[in-house]
Image 1 (cartoon, rainbow, N blue to C red):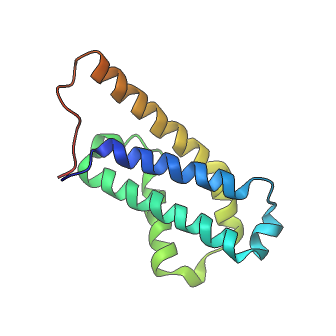
Image 2: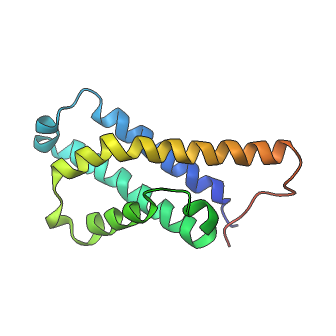
Length: 129
């Protein structure tokens, strides 16, 4: 059964929340020293990139509204295929600066989707095929 495309928005929001939790109270210096923190944050960025990729495929109009959608997919590719080149400070800064913005964009799209359904303007949720 295909997933609703809103599920990918939820995945991104959950990953952003997890990143914020993981980095709570952690300095960039501490982050660089703690492999388990780096691994956890990187895993969440992989999830974000994959969810963004699915949005690009199944809901291009939503994907276009992600200001850093292409960047998220690119980061996922780097983390997956070129992990040796990862700059931990850049990942940390991306987590603090870009993830919250991405989260807000996804929440806004979900709110609009819910409003559309409530107003009876949508007969069924958009699904990924």
